[in-house]
Length: 607
Ligand code: M6R
Image 1 (tube, rainbow, N blue to C red):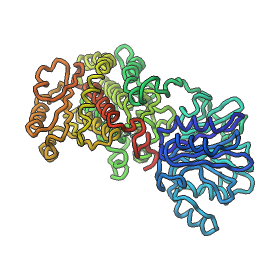
Image 2 (image 1 turned 45 degrees about the vertical axis):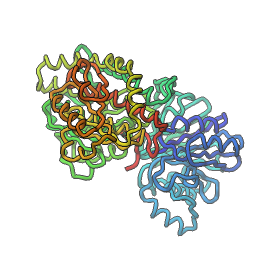
Image 3 (image 1 turned 30 degrees about the vertical axis):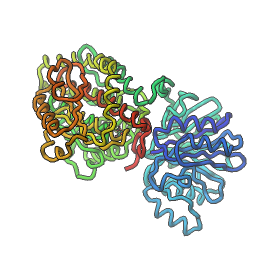
Image 4 (image 1 turned 90 degrees about the horizontal axis):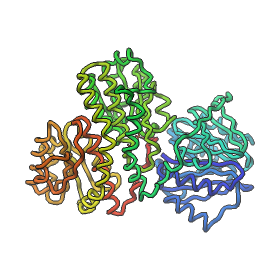
C-alpha cells in the first residue's frame, strides 16, 4: 500500500504535504514525491524515506503554490527508485497524479497507449492512468478522469492535478481508501485521517465508485456515472496525541503501553451488568441461533488473533470454527453457505485478501461480521455487522494493541454466543467474565517489569535464530511472538505447536538457538515442561513465559518472565505481552527500524 495526500487552499501546499506524508509513512516508505502547480506542473521525487524528499526540496526548492499532491510508496510494480516514485506525469507535462492501489490491466492499456505514441518512463502500473487521462483530456479534467477510470481494472485512490486548472484537484476511488478533509477555504485528500488531523476533523469517507472535485471553498462529489452525491461529513473524535509518540522512543512501544487502556475501555463499553453488549453486530438472537458453523478469515497478526478465537469460540459455544488465511480461503472453493457466519478480522479493514475472502463468502450466502479497528474502512462497509475494537490509530507496522483488542473482542463474542447456546454453565461463564475484567490491571503489572524483560531481551539479541513454542490456546501466541520478532528484527524466527517439535524442528536445536516457550498454567503445562527439557538436553537456550507462583519453572529455563495468574482460557491475552516486548527490545538492540521495518507496509491493499 501507499499513502497519498493532496491540498488545495490558501496556504503553502508543500509544508502541509510533507507534514501529512510523515503521518502516512507507516503505509510505505521506499520512495516519495510531490507535485504542485505554479504556472506549470513542478515535481520533486526521490527514493527512500520522506526525510530524503524534505532534503531534496531544501536543495531544490519549489516555487510557492497553494495546490499540490504527494505520495509515499510501497513498491508493487517496479523497483523502489526515483523514476518509479509518484507523482507520474503525462507527456505534455500538464497533468500529474498520485495513486494508491494496483491496476491489473495496465499491460494491455500500456501497449494501446504506446501504439498511439505515448512515451512511458517508469515500470509502474500507475503511469498508464495519467497517459489515459491525457488521451481523453480536452480541457475538462473531470471528464478526462471519468473516462480514464472506466478503462481501469483493479484498485485505486487517485489525486490528479492539471496545470490548466490550478483551482481544481480531482480524486476518485475504488478499492483503496480515500478521505476528503473539509477545512475553511481549504480542502484535503488523504489515504488516512492522521495525515490531515492537525488541519481539520471534518471528514468525508469517499465511497467506492465515487469521484470528487475539490476547490478551495467547495467539494463536489459524483458517482463514476456522473450522478451528484450529497456528502456525509463525519467528525473525527480521536486526539492528535493519539497519532504522536508522546515521549516514547517508538510508536510500537507506545502502543504496547496503550493496551491496558484499550482493553479497559472495551470492557467498559461492551460488558454491562455481566452481559456482553455487541453493538454493531447487527444479528438478532434468532439469527445467531441459526448459525451452524463459523469461519474466520484474516492475515498476519489478525490471523493469529483468529486462531485464539477458534479455541475460545469452540470451547464456549460448541459451534465448529474453521480458520483460513484470507489469501488461501478464496482459492480453495471453501464450504460456506447461508448457515455460516464469516468472521473477518482486520486492523485496517483494507487488507485486499481479507476483502476478497469476504466477497467470496458473501457470494456463497454467508453472513459477514468483521472485527475491525479503522472506522469506515472498506471491510466495515462491506460487512453485515461490524465489531469495532476502538483501539485508536495503530501506527507501528508491527501490530500490538490491535492484536490484543481483536483477541478481547473474540472473547466477548464467544461469551455472547455461550450465553445463547448454553454450552457452558453460568458459573463458568461468570468466572471467565470476572477474570476478564482483571486483565487490564494484569497488563499494568507486566509492563511495570518491562525493564527486566528489556535486559533479558538485549542479553539474548545475538542469537541468529529463535523458536517460539506454545501448546493449545497458546500455540497462536507462539506464532504471534515469532512473527513480531522476525518482522522487526529480521532474525529468522519460527512458531511451532510444542508437540510438533519431535516431528522435525527439534533438529534445529543446539547451543546457538534460543527457544521462547509459553509455559503458562494450563492442562498441558507438564507436557510443555517435557518439551523444555528436550530442548535443554540438546543445549538450546530456553526463555520461558510462566505464571506467577510457578516455583519449578526456574529450574528448567535460562530466563523466566512471569505473568499474573488468570483463568487458563484467558492466558493468551497475557502471555503475548512479554513476547511483544522481547521482539521490541531485541530490535532496538540490533539497531533496526522498529516502526518501519524493511519491505513492509502497515496494511496490504494488494493481493
Ligand atoms: O490490517 P490487517 O489487520 O488486515 O493486517 C493484517 C496483517 O497484514 C498484519 O497483521 C501484519 O501481519 C502485521 N505487520 C503484523 O504485525
